[in-house]
Length: 525
Image: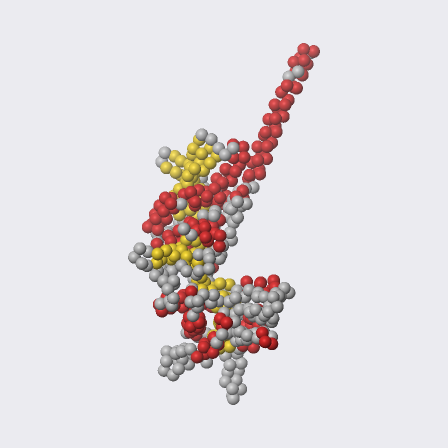
């Protein structure tokens, strides 16, 4: 008995530390697994599919997607149906696999699939020995892209297949490094990206922006144009905007684009799909008041083209120009608008007897100023006076604040917007930034409300040139455009051709107005 007690009691103190260390290690491993399990985004985890590589080729175990049916914006492209045609599919796969593995496919695999979460878990203990070395697209469907990744764990390499949704968010462990972006509104895809190739490229642009592959976004725009898309963000060649005055066909090109965008916005507003507070910024050299090339006639011709386009849709348009503002000797009107109200009414609207737009001015197009008193509503006549028809659309030319006391356009403009109700109010080249007063003071009270009101207007069209930093406005470096109320923002770089022509090449795209730093980073020197 005594011998037996001695044998069992003496080894314990020597083995106890190792046993405790083993328990601690198992506890830490269990804790790590539970912690990293939370890294998996539900949407991303449901989209992930692995393949078993056999002698007969890959066999997918699961490709379950969270939803079935047609993707947003693509009619009739349900699961199992064709999304891209064969030529588009093969081109997209070959182009992305050859040119965009490092900046697009590998980041996609790390940020949007479970392999990224797995790499975080493994490398916490393995010192970076788990890595994703290669990624290749094998298929593109209406909801996802299928990627085959080459994963190395220690000395072992293996193939993994993942399915990444075209509407993915980063897995939980990647959100801090790669903040997500809002999903694209299905209504935008339905109206502006009906063609499958446009739908695919636009959703890819969002994913590229999340992984900070900014230069690839411009390539997506180019790919969509090349593969038969509707030409999202495409500008015509040989506009020669460095030459002033511009050619007439160049002016007409901008008038047509702005008019079409305005009509689209008004239709969307009437269907309760877009706000009634709209603005457009048209700033090619002849429309830029800060340049010597500014031409008031171009501004008036643009307003006339838009007003006539709306009137041809049986809409009654009120074209308004702000009147004098200020107090005492400081009463005045912005120099940019000097004489505009008079010139607008004296323009040739082709509205006389026998002319193309006979009777349009006075019936469908009327003029006014900024203020609630210039909003006309329906009013029945009494026999002596005719019926009064309401204005359907309000077109305001360059509303802007001025230097001086009581020279803010915000109050009369906000009163006019309130009086218009849900009818469209469209601002052309507005400048609603606060200005200092004649005594060098700024009105602080209510400033945030004024800023919020100015920001409540949604851009329906924009063309604005980009110039090299410095005092000169020439040569033109490129442009930032938004060619419709539901279109994406696209930045172009202007390039001269050997034959003397010029081309505007898309270099960046996003759903929001481009940041200046990101913009300049995408421009090649």
